[in-house]
Structures are given as structure tokens and as C-alpha cells.
Amino acid sequence: MSAILAPLSSSGGASADTSRLASRENLDAAGQRFEAIFVGMMLKSMRAAKLGDGLFESKALDQFRDMQDQQLAQSMAAHAPIGIGKAMTEFLAKAAPLRDAPAAPAPTDGGTQ
Image (tube, rainbow, N blue to C red; front, side, top):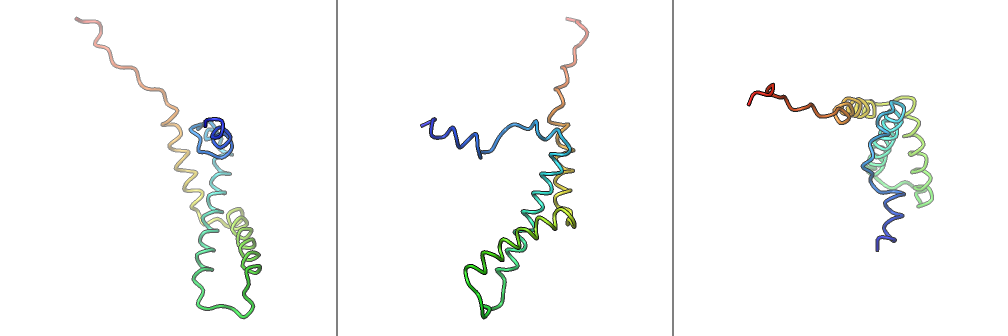
């Protein structure tokens, strides 16, 4: 059973490795990708809230519109961000030193017993 699960955990599962957070470039890239996903979800929600069906609606048109919205979301995240990716990046940058700091040694009483 573990042989079946091994490829899943190495290729797409959640990882506990936080060493990649140490690089500011990686944090910025993750923030930009997060913002692109968030904007894409907003666009998808706005498209779903349409008031009526168009005259030429089809599954193919919906598929191409979804691809266009995905590209638009990536472009918006790269060139005109709304700020949620930067907020996430700043939060992770502040939290990273706390995780990496070693525990403080216990205070000693000077050897008086």
C-alpha cells in the first residue's frame, strides 16, 4: 500500500519542508501565484453571476472564456496586483523568523543548591 502512496506524496502532496520560505524570491513568487488564483476565483464567480444566457453560448465558448480569464488573472497579478498576495508574502516573511529561531536556554539559578 505504501508503494502506491509514495508517488502521490512526493509529487503533489502537502510538504512540511519550509526551507523554501527562506528565500524572498520564492515568497514573492508564491504571493503572485496566490493572487492570480484569488483573482481567477473572483472572475469565475463574477461570470457565474450572469443574469441570462447569451445567444451564442456553448461549452466551447465557456472553456475558452475560462482560459482567457485565467490568463487575465495571471496578468493582473503580475502587473496590477490588488494586494492580497503582498499581504500574504509579508505575513509569511514575518512568521518565518519565529519558526527558525532556536529555543532560548533555560535560566539557571547560578548553582546554588
